Length: 206
Image (cartoon, rainbow, N blue to C red; front, side, top):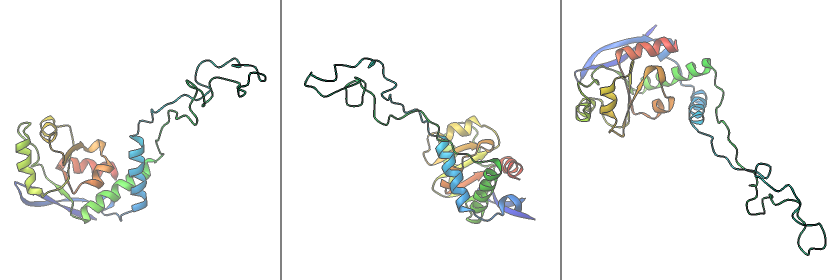
C-alpha cells in the first residue's frame, strides 16, 4: 500500500509523490520519539567539564604539623577541600552523556516522526528550493510558496549554493538525507524534501 506526499512545482501543486505506507503511514509513538530526541541531544553534549579532587592535586604528602600541642586544629594533609589549593569536594569529571538506542528503535522513531509530519501536512516534496547562485534573496522568494515559520530543507547531496543561501536565514536549515536530525524534524513547521532525498529516506527507513 502506498501514500501520497503533496508535491510543489513552480509554486503550484504538482503530481503527488507515492511513498510506502510502511515508512510514512505509522502511528505516532510519542515515548519512542521522546527517547530518540533525548538521546540525540545528550550525545551532542561535550561532557568535558573537569575539576580536581583531593586525590588529584599535587602535594599534601606530609602532615602539616604534629597532632597535639600546637594549639591548632588537627590536620593530616594540606590538600583537603577546606584548604586553599586543595581539592574540590565532589569534583566534576569528564564523562559521556550518550544513551544507547539501537538501530531498530531509531528507524521506528524516525518513521513515526515522518508519518506524523505527513498527517499534519508539514511535509512537502519539491525541487524548487535549489538556487542558481548562493543568493539569500533568491532562496527567500522561493520559500514564500511554503508559508512561514521554521523550515527544514532536506537534500540527497550537499549543495553549496543552497547551503550558503540559507546560512543567513535564522528560520531555515539545510541538511542531507543521510544525516537527519530528529530535533530539527520535530521543531520545524515545514519540512521540504527533494525528490531524490525522499527516495533515499524511504530506502533507509524501510
